[in-house]
Image (cartoon, rainbow, N blue to C red; front, side, top):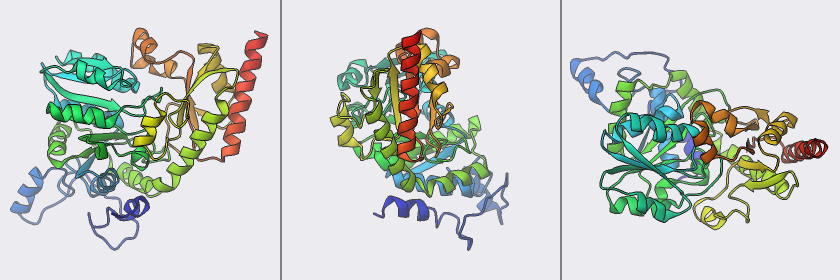
Length: 394
């Protein structure tokens, strides 16, 4: 199998061949057919590339081909956003009366799907402590039709035992869907541990430049065909230019991820033990309670860390205001460092009670970009020193 850098440059070469070195942008809503048979075939071909852009586009197919090979899956498909990837997959796999298992520590949008959207549609849900593999087994019911996992989790960086969850699910005929946004396929490939479907907010590391909103789902073709059918109805279509930008961003993914990994680890190590910091959540730290598990299923630990401040909500917010290089922003995974206060950001997705159960109020999520490591570390330490002084003088 070729390496990841070769995959990102060449995996899409035969999808829609042309003599252009850089793939063209197929900015068209529709394609014409030479005859009726070709037209009829295009109208029913799952994840096609030259019938109608809601059905598929060459730029969609090219980006999907790269993701599928990176994730080691049979196929992939792109969507208009990460949430479109999640909701389209879930709606394709469950119906009223079914049951879904998710995690307590997960992205707020995922939590809202589990706690708010699905119950409105007649689907019951359970959220479990994903650090305990037995919790998934205890939550299983005869009506369980899907298990959602996320590792490392957003924003507490907790780790899920992918192999244990996959083995449990397979034994009961339940499909699994993993959010691999934080890890990326460069650091972890859930399919290698038996997970059926993998999704990403491709807005993040896969694109890597904070200039596109996109999602992707990878897995067996049979499951993706079912998801694609629902995607046709929901219209969660990625624009051709956005698909092209996603593909262009993925060309450098293997170059960017090692720097994100190095910066994330350096920041975690530097802030651990700082008197203003109660705890640093980062699976690359030996002090992380699941470090050994993380090391067993990750080759790198990513650029995101959770910094829990002793002063709570106000101190966390003040720390963000003192940072010079890490911009206050809701996203992550780009070349620029971004930081956010999850307890503030998730107010539009979860109730105050749900937020309190999901994240500490004094937690900051810092996503290290690709800046020079020494600059990021010095900036974060200076900000932590400043809020420590502020608290002492309060």
